[in-house]
Length: 293
Image 1 (cartoon, rainbow, N blue to C red):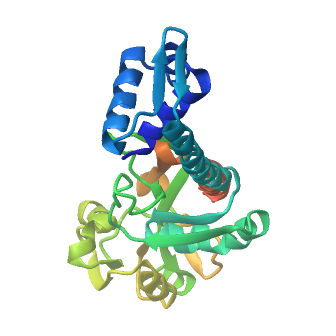
Image 2: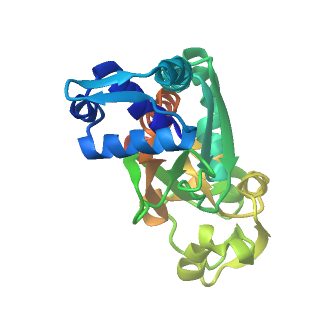
C-alpha cells in the first residue's frame, strides 16, 4: 500500500463525497472511487457505507482513519523538516572548480561565509575535469566554459585572467620589459604534455623560438619556478599581479581572459544553503576591472 491510497481515503472520509475529495486532490471522482475500491479490496474490509447522501465511515473505516491520520502526520512532518532545512542556510554544499580558482579565490575567503552562514559546511572539489552536476557529483560549479545544455541555472559572474610573467631578477638579467612579444631568447616554463591545453598551446603558437626549460602539471610548481628565476610562465593575474617579485611581460588580453560561470542544477536553487553559497561565490570572483596593471 502507498501513502496515496490513504490520502484518497482521508479526503473522502473528511468530505463524505467523491466529487469533493476529487476537487481537493485535483483529480477526478472516478479516480478517487477506484482508489477507494482498490484499498478496500487490499484490506479485505468495507470502509464506507455508500448512500445517495454521500459516503460515511463504517466501524472498520473509523479504525483505519485513525491509523491513516497517524501516517499523514508522519508524512507531513517529514515534508516540513525537509522544507525547514531548505529555508535555513544549513548543511553541506559541494563546490567544484579548477584548482587555481579554488586555491586562489575561494579558499582565502572561506572565513567570510563561515561567519555569515556558520551552519554551512563547504566541500571544495578541485579538479580540471568537468564534474557532472546532474549526477550530484557537486551542487555548484565555477567554470570557465558555459555548459551548452542541461537543466541548469547559469550566471556569468566574473573573469579569469592569465598573463605571462618572469621574475624581476630574470627580467633584469635578460633586459626584458613589459609588452614583450619576441620570445626567441626566452626560457619557457610550461605544462606537461598531458595537460598542455591549460596554456602551453599559447607558447606553441606565439613563442616558437623559445626554449622550454621546465614543465609541470601544477600551477603552484610553475609559480615557484618562475619566482626562482627559471623563465617565463603563464600565471593567474589575481596573485601574480600583486607579487612584487614578478614582472608581467604580456597582458591577459593577449594570453588568456575568459568568463567565469556559476552553474547549479535548477532543482537545487530553491535551497537556502545553495543560494547562499552561490551569492558568496558571485561576490568574491575577480571582476574584469581587476585584470589590469
